[in-house]
Amino acid sequence: MRAAFPAVAALLLVACASVPPAPPSPPPSAPGETIAAAAAGLLGTPYHFGGADAGGFDCSGLALYAYARAGLAIPRTAAEQQRAARPVPVAELAPGDLVFFRMHARRVDHVGVYAGGGRFIHAPRAGLAVRYGDLASGYYARRLVGAGRFW
Image (cartoon, rainbow, N blue to C red; front, side):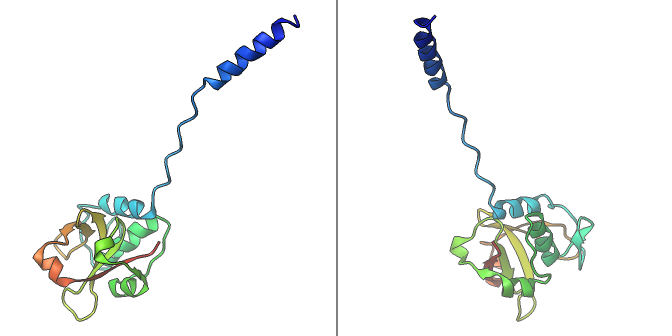
């Protein structure tokens, strides 16, 4: 029996050594990806002035709602969001960043959630649903005044 013990122990050690390691856990999703995905899930939702829930959204309500899905609280209006956000150069935009526009006033009065690839998700105005916009579009490019991040 004593002679067999070293052989059995050696076999067990070899067998244990041949078990492949467990695959690494995927990295946790960045807050920005969660925010952008939440905004994308709202595509087609109707515009509603002052709206910040699934019944309808205005632009800043959409941002507020998408950020809340990632556990982040942000101010309510586009102007307040722009003032509170950490500025991000447009060349360094990441999904989930906010993009700010001056549409009809001297102050920031519109916001969208950057989705990547030069596109953003926003609630444009009454009569239109939540949709994608293109930062390279002449209309939005002329009105873009900056971008910001809260994470």
